[in-house]
Image (cartoon, rainbow, N blue to C red; front, top):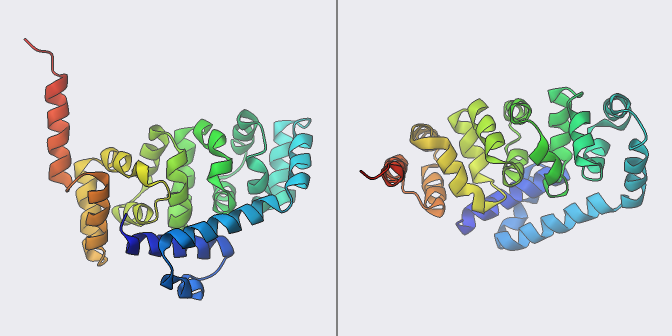
Amino acid sequence: MGENIELRAEILKLARLLGFQPEEVGYLSALPGSEVRQLREQVTELLFDSHLGALKRLAAASRLLPVALVAQMGEKAFGPLLSARITGLLDPDKAVDVAARLPDAFLADAAVELDPRRASAVLARMPPERIGAVSAELAARGEYVTMGRFVGHLPDESIRATLDVFGPADTLQVALVLENKERLGDLVELLGPDRLEEMLAAADSAGLGAEARELLEMAGASGPSDLKRQRAGARARARPQS
């Protein structure tokens, strides 16, 4: 991904992590995007590991409690921040069962505070329709940085459910701050040529056409027509020979 796009994305992510406005850390634009990312990762480790011992004890205690009680404690006592810190320390299946008892709005609050790298096993087990519902809540809030961090930890079915609730502008904003760039090609493929064309139109309207086309180049596609040709070629190769 081009340096300008990467730097812009990293400043947005760091500002979100610290609870700042992007302009408050705008002075970091003098640094390479890779260095801002390194700083963000160091801050993330500091935030998540500063009380790791206590969090592990809370997670261990939750194993002895019924799922319904853990969910109630998470929503009413712990709140989204502490719940997000504990999520990656829980048994993944139990964490999914707890999430099933929590409202979409609370899960969206927790997602903002979650480090998806520490909860990838939980995210992979979440039902796609629930991922889609929480993504819709996050999109309504403009939490694109949060969703951009999650894409690399979701299976294709969950990404497809998310794209189904996004408008073209939502998809564009998430793509611009995508954390795992290797999933960019998968995202383009799951979008399909029609929605990709709509996303490019939204990018042009927002003055981000050049950035969107740079993302396509990184994904190995020149545009919707290229994707259509790729699909046609794949269907032809899959067709049984007479």
